[in-house]
Length: 455
Image (cartoon, rainbow, N blue to C red):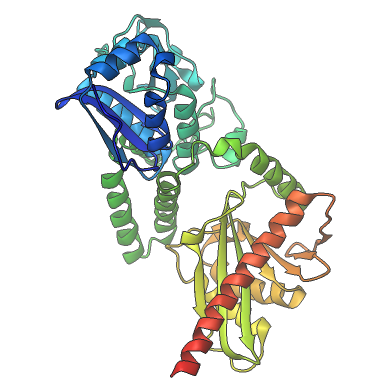
C-alpha cells in the first residue's frame, strides 16, 4: 500500500498513483499537497474504488506546473497516453470532456462528452458551441473520417470552458450559430475576427484566402496548446515576431507580441482558472470603468506611471502594470531619467512615455493612468502622438491622469471625473494603480541615491 509521501509541493500540477512504474490513476490539482492529503485523511470516507486503488498503488509521482491551465492540459495528455485503469473505472466515459474542431472553411470549436458523430453535414456538428449528434464513445474514440477532430479527454468541463474562454482572448474564433450580415458583438470586443460569420465576406479571392489562412492559424494554435505543444508554439511565435520586426512589418509583429504575452499570462498565473471566483468582481468593475470612460473596449491591461526625484536629481520613472485589475509585477518597468535636467516632472513623464513605446515587444495597455493633472496628461498625449502616427492601434489607448488629494481624474477626451467613495471598486482601483507606480518609482529612486552615497 502506498505511503504518504514527504516534501509534496503546494504548486498546481498533476499527480500519478503507480504500481511500480505502471500508472494507475492520473489527477490534477491547484495545490498538489492539499489534494494528496485528502487521500490519506479518513480513508474510510473514500469511495470503494479509491480505497482499492490506494491499496494497489506502491508509489506516487507528481509534476509541478506553472498554472491550473497547464495542469488541466497535462492531465489530459497523460490520461490519453497511459489510459490508467482507475481513470476509466472511476469515471463513466460520459463524464469526460473533449474539445471538438469542425471541418469547415472557418472551423468551430465546441466541448462535448460524446466525441463520435453520425452526421456528415458540418453545419450540425457543433456549430456555435453546440454538441454534435453523437453515438456512444470510449475513452480513446476512433473518429469517423469526416467527423470533427477531437482533443481530450479532459476531466473538468467547467475548467475546460474557462480555458477556452481565455484562449479565445488571444486567438479569436467564431461562435455565431448562423451567418449574418452585420459584424457580431464578439468581433467588436476582439473575440472574433469579424469576417468568418458575415454573409458579405470579402469578394476578392486573395483577400478571402488571406482571411481563411489567418482564421485557421488561430484554430491551429489553440489545437497545439490543448494538445500540450505550448513550448514549441511559443518559440515559433517569438521567432515570427522577430522576423516581422526585422522586415519592418510592425503591425504583424505587434499582433504576434500580444499573442506571446497572452500565452505567458495564461500559462504562468497559478490561479488563472480559479480566477472566475474573482472574475465577477473584476467584470463588474470593468463594466463600470467602461461606462465612466465612455469606452466599450475590454480593459485587460492598465499601466500607471509616476516620477520620483529630489530637485531633479536621481530622477526615476516607473510603469506599474495591472492585468484584469490585479498587479502584474513581472511586467513592471523602471526608467532612469536621461534627457531632462532640473525639477521638471512634466517633461520627465514625456520622456518615460516615449521610451516605453519604443518597446513594441511589450504588450500595449488599454488604459494609462499618469500621476498628476492636466500638464502630465498633455505630456503623455504629446509623447503618444508620435507613435500613433505609425500604429493606428495606439489610438484606442485611453489616457488619463489622477490628481492627488482631490482624487480627480482628467481624461484625454476632456472628461473631468471626481472619483467617489460611493463607488469603492473604481475609487480603490485608481488609487491602487497610482500608489503602486509611486511606490515602485520611489524604491528605484532610493536605490540610486544609496549607490551615490556609497560611492
